[in-house]
Structure formats: C-alpha cells, structure tokens
Amino acid sequence: MLYFRILKQKIFTSLPIIFLYFFSFYHFQTPEVGKINFFAFNFSMILIYFYVLKFPEDLGYENIFLAGIINDTVIGTPLGTTSLSYLSLSLFTSYIRNATLRSIMTTEWFTFIPALFFSNLIYLLVINNFSNVSFYYLELLQSTFFTFLFFPIFYYIFSSYQRLISKN
Amino acid sequence: MAIDRDDFVISIRSALLKKGAKQKFSLFFLIVLSILIITLDKYSFSYMKSARGVLNDLVYHVSIISSQPVVFKKYIFNKTSQHYSVVNENISLKKELNYLKKQKFKNAYLSSENEILKNALVLSDNKSYEQNFSISARVILDQNSPFLKSILINKGTNSNITKGMTVFSNDFLMGTVIEANYLTSRVLLLTDLNSKIPVIIENTNINAILEGTGKKKNLNLNYLPENYEIEPDKIIFSSGKDGFLIPGIPVAETYLNKKNKVLIKLLGDPNQAYIVNITNGQITR
Image (tube, rainbow over all chains, first blue to last red):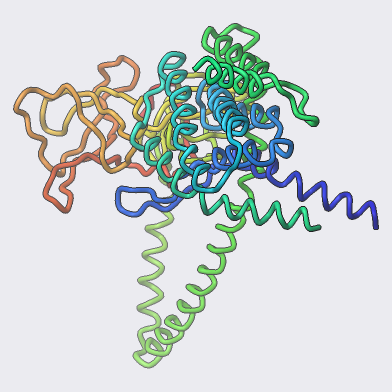
C-alpha cells in the first residue's frame, strides 16, 4: 500500500515533466479561424515559466534542456536553439523569482511579457545567425501573443493541480 | 543606486549558478552547453552529422509513437463516421433496390454498373509513370510546424535516398529531400518559405520562380516581367532551368479567389499525401 502511494506520488509530481516531453515530441495541430490561429500557443513555455517560478524543484533544468533538443530535432531547427530559448526563459524567470518578495498572479502574468520577449529574441538571433531557415515572423508573434493570453488559464489549472498533489 | 546594482548582480548570479536539491547541473552550465551544441551544429563536423542522424532517427520514432493517441482518435472518428455513412448508404441502397425491382431494370443496372467497374479497373491498371521508376515511401509524420513546412518519410539512406532528391505525390511535384537519416528523411514542401523552383506559365514563354509562403492556396511568383498580370486558370509547369527537374512537370495553377484576385495554388495537396515517390530529380514518362 505504501509502495503504491509512493508510486502514485511520483507519477503525480512527474506529470509536468511528462507533459514537457510529450509536447516536445508531439506538436498538435490547432484549428484556424479565418487567418488567425487562436489556439496556436506555446504550451511548453507556459509550463516552464510557471514551474520555474513556483515549483523549481519539480521541473529540472536538465529536462528543459533535453526537451529543447528534442523539439529542435522534431521541427528541424538548428540543434540547441530551443534549448537556449527555454533556458533563457528559465534564467529570466529565476531572476524574477529571486527579485520578487510577494507574488500575485497579475504581476506574474505581466512579467511573462519580458520573459517571452527575451526568450524569443534569443530564438530569433540564433535562427538568423546560425541557419539559413526563413522564418514566419507573424506566426511567431501570433503564437507569443496567445501564449501570453492563455497564461492565466493554465496558471489556475497548474496551481489547482499542485494544491491537489500537496493535499494527497 | 549601488545597492540596486548589487541586488541585480546577486539575483542574476543566484539564478545562473544556484542548483536545487534535485538538479544536477546549473543553468549557466546548460546555457554554455546549448551554445556549444549550436556552434558544433553550425559548422557540421562529421561526428556531429552522424550524432545528429542517430538522434533524428531516435526522436522521430519516439515522436511517431507519441502521436499514436491522436492517430488512434482519428481512426476511431473515421471508423465511426464510416459506420454511420454505411448505415445511411445501406438505407438508400435498399430503397434503390426496391425501386429497381419494381421497374424491372435490374439487368440494365447491373450491365451499366459492370461497364463502370470495367472502366475503373482499366484506369487502375494504367499505372502512373512515376511508380515504375521511383522509390516509394510512406509519410510517417506531418506535424505542420509553424516554422518549417515539411513531412517525414519512412525511407532514408538505407533505401538510397540522398539529400536533394525530388518527391512526388499522385504525379504532382511535392518537394525535395532536405535531410536524409539512416531510416527516415525530411521532405521540404513546396509551400515552405525556403522552397524556390523555376517555372513557366502555360501558353506563354514567361519564366518565373515559384516560392512558398507557408500556405498551399497562396504561393508567390517572383521575377515576372514588369507590368505582367497573371491570368486565372493557367497551369504552371517546371521550366527545367535549374538543370535538375525536367521541364513540363505540372506544379501549380492560377485561380480567382472570392475577391476576384488571381492567386496561385498547388495542384497536389501536401496534407493529403500518404504514399510519396522519391526520384533523383527527374521522372521518365
């Protein structure tokens, strides 16, 4: 019984990592409404930002790095680009965590803007200087905007989930 | 002011170097490792190429497995809709049969159906020109990434596929192989921003470069003569000016959209491709 409880706890705490790897391996297609793809958001970035900010022990930097490498392999961008982008997001988030005394959802939502900007800037710099790949700037902008917009929804989902785990 | 700067430096240093209890590496170490990997990948050393090939094969296969729940969902959805369409078809066929019995046209119906089936059989026997020549492969992953319009196929260097080979689907040009691993290959679709092929417009001697835009129903024609206006319903063929593709392969067509604007769309639909043919650039007719 105790063994089963430990295993259950282990699975529950590893779920963010499983999701991070799953969305690195599989890029789901979202429906387009007219010219705008409302649901094209970067789930991995929301996950990384939330967990590095709130529960840094649950999502190791090694996993973030490895998920980035896998993501690069799947979508065909230069190896290490997404890793660097994710790690720069983690760096920025880690800085916010160290610098903030009292955190509320609204401030964390708005500090997500410079974090996304910093991370995407690194991504664009690497793509432009280390590869010949042309870039869909508008789609990246769209995806970034909806990533920012959907953050509060996932914030509540993740917070509720973490509360549920700690209760159990 | 100096205290503020000190705080900033301490926070950054802490973010970069502090390791959690469960973490083996610091953020600083992993960032340096990422930069090292990017640099090694950029200069394409031989060992990096082989390492990337192995990594690609491994990740692609895991990616295929991870996409199985979605594939299974699609399969269930298709089977369910097929079931309902079969039920509906059954009802309508019963009605039709009764009607035919009443009208005593059964024989005529069967003979005409026979004729249709014979024609279909002749058409299916008439194999397309590319099938006799090329390597056939199955599309294993079509992830529709927002950054690269490409697909993955289940043949690689073990089936003599090399970088630069041309890919066809249902006799229509689809793209080129941009990455060949041992077991898998990546095909850059004509719709991608990086895809550029020399073409000629039907019934004219106008040469241009067909470029992808990321959308299959809105491609770009560049280097057209000044003041030239594209007409609708014209087929665009490969011109062969690159010395690689033979001239005359149908690639795209022009059409009028709802706003009466002439646009260019691909003849083949890359999203519907399931089995593709890979050639060394040319096809024999």
